[in-house]
Length: 408
Image 1 (cartoon, rainbow, N blue to C red):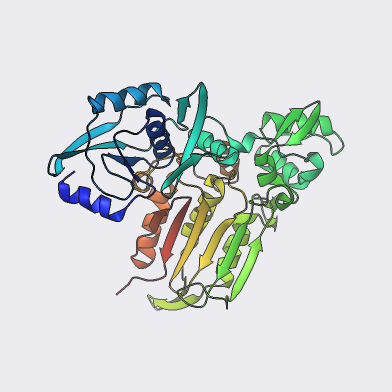
Image 2 (cartoon, one colour):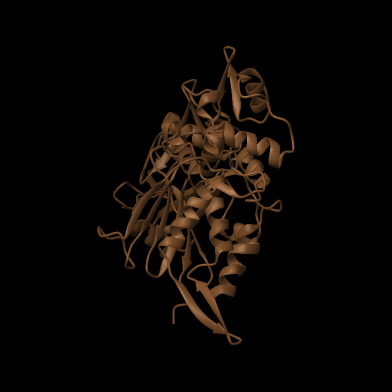
């Protein structure tokens, strides 16, 4: 880092990735800030800069060794920060830059007074993680799967047995228990991670409710899709359509595969069809109807949003938004751990909700290779109208944006 870059950081002030600290900071306070950065997206601490941005410099002996030591003993799992010095940031005043990347072994805890505490970064502050935030950190690390948790208050009666029968007989080619055989259903669905047993009772898991729930919203308010169509390029009170799409992910099909009742994927595709145009073009002397967005691409990004979103985030649905010049689908939750936008475009595969991915693959919603962004979404849009999809990583969400036409 150059002096110019340092001064730019100081000028912009503290934020979710930058913090100022005097070098007389207590080791447990510095460990708190480092742990919070590791649990979000990494960050930089400027040692020798006061809260107001004034440069005080450093005077603690063996400062690098001191920070390295607390990073091993006060943070779990231990880390190795990256150090850089800016000498004479002001005459005779040196700054130690301490950097940590996003932590690959989330969640990280600070160890202090025989207590382990997990912190998260919110804006320019580091605060203790709530139970829900801590759960998401463990889920992002792959150490727990939220979808395997029981959905309190549910039983077999809260699952759509018609859909379950269709899945067993048509897709798995397997026999299924009789309607009244609740123990048999519970046993089979527990083996598929769609139910779990507690005190001799079978309770539906989160995955079971999401995939086959008779009324998923009753138990999982975050299970639907909020679909909105605006007439212009920006959100407006005068939306031309605003619908809450609800129900299980899976469709109910006849024996020949015809869809009798739509799942969330078909509901979302139908919303797009009703709120976008079909343009007629002449190709080779024949009329060809061309949609605003190619169906295969839409299907892929809708399925991706459903199977990969972070369902531990309450109170917010996936949002599908249509503007006059673009379509956006936003999933709650960041990409897990080391996944990046560039990695996804290259073909990186991840599964936050492996059980959902596996089962939706049985319905042919998900390819076995799991490279839909690289092999379908990007080439599909380039072929359709010469535009490349935009993939936007927010602090608490992930957005895919499709452009209606190439900007001239």
